[in-house]
Amino acid sequence: MRVGFVGWRGMVGSVLMERMLAENGFSGLESYFFSTSNVSGKGPDVGEGETVLQDAFDLKALAEMEVILTCQGGGYTTEIYGKLRESGWSGYWIDAASTLRMEEEARIVLDPVNRPIIDDALAAGIKTYAGGNCTVSLMLMALAGLFKADLVEWLTSMTYQSASGAGAANMQELAAQMAVIGDYARPVLDDPAATALDLDRRVTEALGSDSLPVSNFGVPLAASLIPWIDRPVDKGQTREEWKGIAETNRILGTKREIPIDGICVRVGAMRCHSQGFTIKLKKDVPLDEITEIIGSANDWVEVIDNKKEDTLKRLSPAAVSGTLKVPVGRIRKMLIGDDYLTAFSVGDQLLWGAAEPLHRMLRILRDYLGR
Ligand code: HSE
Image (cartoon, rainbow, N blue to C red; front, side, top):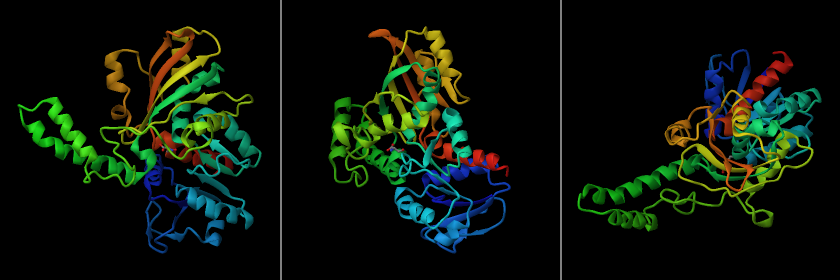
């Protein structure tokens, strides 16, 4: 199978490469690496010898591929995808960007949740597959059991999204902000007579200082938060919030739309998105059954006991970062009523939120084509 990789050097692309290498995903593939900036440069050696970078804007070279997997971003997809299809190319396009997710000719892939939809699409000759929004994919990995059991009447998701969702430069900016705050705080931390209010004054001073880098986020994120992600859309929502209802229903292929809404918030985590859910159940199901339904939905979801020690140890970005685990905890019936459930989940935004569904789609495609 001739596969062209575009955007493999960026953050999501690098995580994808790591996953492919870890799972021996390149073996037997004819892999070609494309570049938008370093054509003819040295490409990565993924076990089949040295490679030479091809031009990511060369439609002819792209058209040689049976599969193109791109993590290059929406701008690239917008520029190239239509032209390539118009030129008659009928290969498989697998894309991390949001550009094509809602197109008729495309499907959003998250196989532990919607494998039947993917299989149907392949059989029907669908050739365009997009990874979902990270928050949506991570919510679905966590709550897949409830959706599958048709228990969700509606849900809200209040998010705690990491810097990685905004991009690599934003992760660097977050850590740089922390460093500036640390520098401001240091003399007070070193002074045994200083109080917490002295410390707070220094931190507040750092947040307002010109030395705090804010060119990516626009404002401080460290020691603060940003309750706005992406651009505004209709009805006061942000686009990130709109994706919750639009993409979830599309991934699940629901006949009647499940209402989903919430507020998306950027917090100072590096690469794990967390979410707090309020779930209106279609009926009152006992908590032990609910726990079983959630915990048995896929190989990665883990139910965390609603106890302080377990929660602190296992339900946080610090505990999950860099892993494929999707812990769901704080599961309980709400005081509002027995058909209202609350839960909290954490997942790695770069793995299940971005690279992993694409890496798996490539494998599914390979099996489908019998390669
Ligand atoms: N839009 C997401 C975020 C990135 O800003 O966190 C992943 O889809």
